[in-house]
Image 1 (spheres, helix red, strand yellow):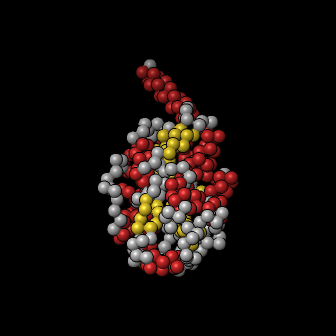
Image 2 (image 1 turned 45 degrees about the horizontal axis):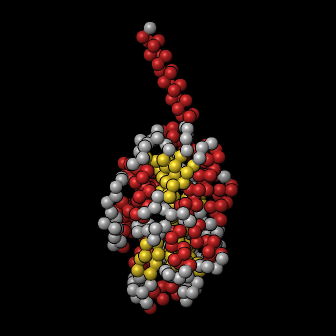
Image 3 (image 1 turned 90 degrees about the vertical axis):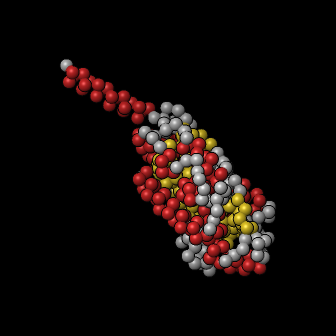
Length: 321
């Protein structure tokens, strides 16, 4: 009888577990975007989120929690319940860069679990149309002619835009001033208005302004030209070799999130990323849909972290502490 009771208990446990897995999600899912609306990360979160909502039959809420170069949003997720209903769409800044620049209120390794790498995109070097330059070489010459006077914007201290500017400074021994903003959406009106002259931008927020003539594109930071701006040369083609920089966005959940929830999120996000209209919308602004396993994302993040650690040491870049 005891053996039979144990068998019945085991069967009930399996059935209950299966029902729980099938029941996820039972309510809306919050995707925390740690940067302001209008940027590439926000566009990715909303584009993918809309498709997830359709297929999962639940509302996907994009929650823009800005500040701290992405740290505030990441910390919200790291401290949230590990139940699959709070997800981070992270960027290199708060995942692979800032851990080497300052003390964070969370640990990427201990508090966040990878789900999937969503998007990879080059940066595009854009300047105000009134700036008297037509190429990267002319821009470098102008910066040298105005030591300490030229500024460059970034979407936040420690982000890839910041480090791209630092790399240009290192390689060409330039004296220019970094001006961080709270997200790419905050940079655009300042750049278009002529308050800051240059920006290593993500493709999505800048490409529409380049096409409309409100910004001038000098180069993209990928190894090959972007299909979104085929007329814009790479940095190497523009005379700046060994300058390949990519931005990326990836999904994470709080550590301890059940495996079935991670598996469902991975499946749904990757399914959305394979849809033709999603890939087309992202490609139209220079972003490439990716999609990986959680394990692949984990390996990728470790490699990116090591890469940025070396660049930070070389540049002498400092955090906010």
